[in-house]
Structure formats: C-alpha cells, structure tokens
Length: 481
Image (cartoon, rainbow, N blue to C red; front, side, top):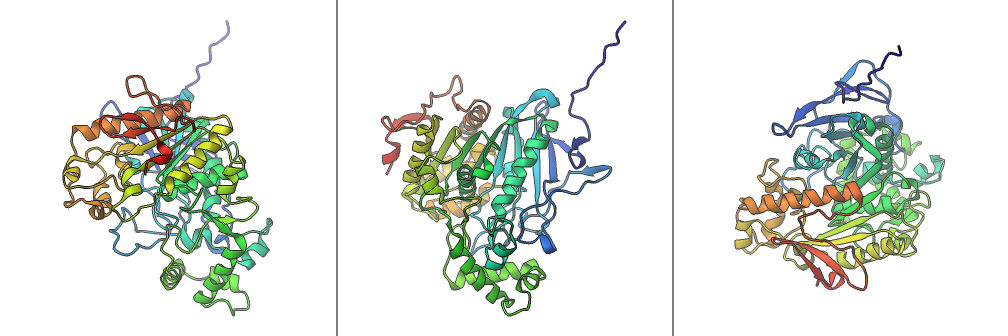
C-alpha cells in the first residue's frame, strides 16, 4: 500500500527566504489578522566602498532573523517648516530593507502583491511610515510590500569618476536601482509569504508616483511588475522629468567641491570616507544656495542610456514603455489650489501616460480625488496633496496619526484646525477605495460589484471617476481645469 505524503503549505514561523529564515508578528483586529515582517534586507548595506554603487546581494545568515522592528531609514533631513515625519530618525545608510504585510494563510494562496514606493520627492520618506503599515488594505486580499531606498545625494549623485568606474559607464540612479533590486527580491521570495510573483502592482504617491513612472519607462524593469498606480505624481512631463547624465555629472563635480574632496588625490575615496551626515548637510546647503526646492532637490533621475534610454516623456510618447494596466489619480485641490503643492500640468502628463498605455493595448483608468473630511470641508479646505493616502490605506479613524501630517498641507488649503472631522462617510469612501485598488491589483480592472462602474479611459470619451461621496463617473478628464 502506497503511503500518502502530506505536504504542509501553511505559512510557517519562521518563513524561509533565499538568505535565511525570518519571523514576524501578527497585527490587526480579531478575525482580520495580518502577519507583518518588518526590516527584511533585500540588498547588502551600501556602506563604505558600496556607497554610490548599485545594490549588491544580501549575505546569508544562520538561525532566524527577528523581523519585528522597523529598520533604520535612509539618511534625510526635514525641509523648512515640515513637521517631523514618523520615524525621521534614526537614519542610516544601512537602509535597504522592506516590510511585508500578508493576510495569506498558505504559501499556495498566490495573492496579488502591491509594492509601495513612498513619496517625499526623492529626498524624504520611508517604508516605516505607520500609515502604509496599517493592516486594513491587506485585509482586502493583497500582500503589501513597503520598500526603503537610498535618497537625495546618497541615492542619486552622478559624477564623472563614478561613471568611469561603472561597467556601464554611468552613475546616479542608485535609488532606482534599489527599487529594481527590491522587485527582483519579490520575484524570488514573495511566494513564501503567500504572494504571487506573477501578479505584482507597483504603486506610489507624489515622488512615489514618479518612481512608478520611471520603472514603467526603464527597460531594466521589464517583467518585474504587471500593473501600476500613479497618485499625484509622475516622471512624464514637468513634475520630475529626469535630466541628462552629463548635466547631473556636472552637478556632482560642484558637489564634490562643496564637500571639499575635489582636490584630493583620490576624490572618490575621500568622499566615501565622509560620514553621511556631512553628505546630507552639503546637499541641503547647495540646494539653498541654488534655490533648487523642487521635489527632487538637487537630483533627478539620470537619463543615462541604461536605466533610462531617454526621458520618460519621450519613452511614453514613442510607446517604448513597459505597458501594464494603469490607474492615474490626482487630487482636485492640487490642480486648482490653494495649497503648498499645486501643479495643474499633472493632468496633461497623465493623459500622455494613458494614451501610451491605451495605444499599446492595455487599459488605463483616470480618477480625481475630491473628498474632504467634514470639518475641514466646512472650513473651506480643498482636497490637498496626499489627502487620498489615508483612504487608500484605510486610516479612516486616524489609527496611524497621519492626519497631523496632512494638516500641514491642508492648512494652506483652507483647514483651520488639526482635527479633520472624520466620520462614517470617511470610512465608506476608504473602504470603497481599498476595494477598488485591491481589485485592480487582482485583475487589472478596478471595478467592484456593487460600486460605481468605472470605465477605462478612452481619448474619445475622456471619462474619469470622481472620488467623492457619492462616487460619480464624469467626462472631460483632460479638461478638468
């Protein structure tokens, strides 16, 4: 009699990754628990000789790595009067870690994966933000991956000497190469957490939206993701358009002079030996001196002929992007003002992206977020930059404390008190958005039975979803303003 072999596919404690075993924690409400793994390394610490080099493989470890605490975040500095962002400290160049939130019970669940690329331009932010680690979006049947990457001059510095030592003859874009490394890690490891490596959605807001668009534009990212969501940002058009490598190399030479290493016998070795705090200080000093206060600060993505063969704008206009189903979302207040961050050109840039995706045979979906919590709405506030994030991640009751950060942006947009006045309507809007975002990750189509029918964007009809209570489909996305 043949013995029956029983195979246990349950997600074990610990989980085996390619570099070693990891353990996590369980969070969430009773009956809706989610496993969270904080601070899993996806690349080697970019320290010493690895500063300003592409990310390298993780070293293997023995035993079980306790992934119950967030890692340190990428070196960064607060800008102007911004309030302290959650976990702005401690910082370290040893920052190439990711967090996973999974509702899966078994490794065979093959749930869709959503990889979050944080905002903050290319200067601020982290995967440790309490908002993006709230367990409610995973509760809709998706695995969330939050990624840290190098930022500012540590993540984007270009210099002729760095290009000379590179096998590809390029420099800069280390932040973007970090993101590629994280996506490769997802391909090799996410199945152990119940995720499906063949169904990966990249999504991000503001600078994170630009990161998503850069990955869509890069041939190096081909096959690493299958859907994309850009919220309040893109690298197509005027927002964060990228710059020629030679221009950024020239900026790098000025930066070395600011650091005082340009006359050294080995300027690269001298720069790599400096504490990261001096690098960040020089970055901020040069940014003030040159009055470069855009979302990228001193640095942009380098059009280097390798990661980016051309500007993202030209890549999309010539149909050479990595085509995938796409959602683009803008907040009405960031188009009309008043506010701190107002950029009406975002709509025409989004139309260029939708047109390219549509011509390539994939579906694109456009939406305008125009919901404002009750108290702020009464005070005359508009749907400012970043306001939709609390709804995408299910923070309809200020579980994460994120609404204080939103208040910094909402104040110039009309809010007069820190309390936004969250009600059951905010929960309703949030639950609808989470359901649609999760459905898009599952199928490439955000439509959920029982909610409004959201048509794919077509140039002739120009339809979009207005996200406000009640949700409505309207015409004239390209002419919103």
